[in-house]
Image (tube, rainbow, N blue to C red; front, side, top):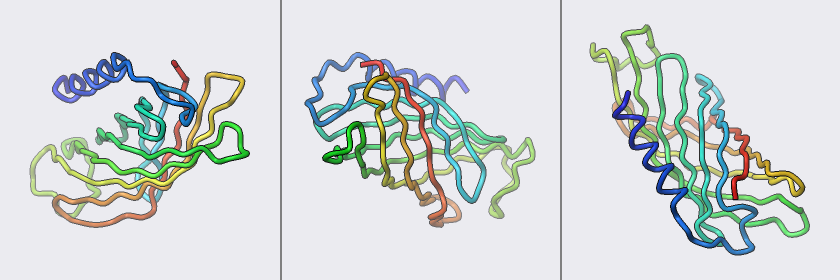
Length: 171
């Protein structure tokens, strides 16, 4: 598990250390919070961080946990404010996801289980969503459609996934 957590903590450190100015397009520079991935399958929860690098470019990283599964993901997104809607913006993005599944604890979702106790899956996840930054508080939230396109083992596309996020704005 240390091999999984250490790269994520390194990413957090690098994002906090980045001293690039975001222009007026972004409602904040860095925020941390809780991500919830839900849909047709298992619901996953975990920490997330979003950092806006410039007017429209942002990176969101998360570690999500469920029953016998851990998902690491990093997404790039293009963000744009909605004129006339204070604090509301839309975004579109994509990013890789890596899933670590522990079959030893009874996780039997996939029929291609090959007898190993653990399994690693790779996926690409596009995202299309809305984010709202509460203008008078350091809080933001998002909702997006985030389908799952598994590109390893049993290649498939699951369009029924969504994510929610609740963040505390640091800067």
